[in-house]
Length: 309
Image: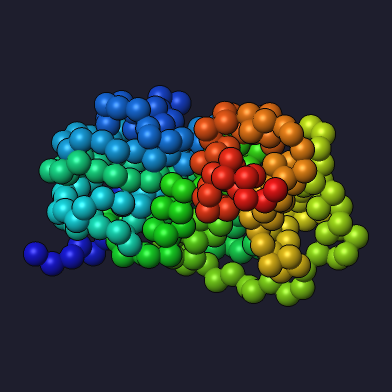
């Protein structure tokens, strides 16, 4: 069977559900999937990232308040999707994406269990990124069914090993990745693909120092992307690009490395318990800290401490 065209659009009005009656993406996914997410990182608006592992699906996904973008992480399988009068088949496998535009509705028939990472993206975020990039292109997303896009797929699947139970790091990662994925969607999956100009030049030394001081603060200073960008007098879009140009790292990657260095210093130079180190660095639990440390350092905090002393 041939691969689908995967470029049909589905008007939100066709669903007959008013905007005020729509569920948020996480609410609708919980309803239709009948389970709890394996991992989730959302903000107050319901925007964010969720990792689901669910049973075969034969149901209708009702209109939602967010665009939903999915990357498949399970075994290869065929599926069917019906949107209004449109019928499509596709093959779920790594490297493909699925897009359900805000307000659209479709029936899904997936015969095998599913492992999928989802992005919940408010349209206002998509429009903000387009405005910050100074593009006047339309921001309508195309409906996609198992559409080949290894870049978007890889970005979404990367969240599985990055969300680590640290509120500051996880929030910074989520907002940073959301903006990056919004940029990718505008470039590859909108009704009028957007071309983004390459960054020229990074942050000035003074602005970079101020950003690093905020990231390194031991107080309850706001290290959100909004705060960092505001300090620099830039949009979130331009701040992230300029910060990486200056440091070679994204704000999240820079802070994650800094946190690892702090953890190593405390483990090597103090008698603080591992639980205390975890709490000092903002981890929800000692277990979450130990898992994050091992992913970065290649060994547990206890083993690293014994070897470093």
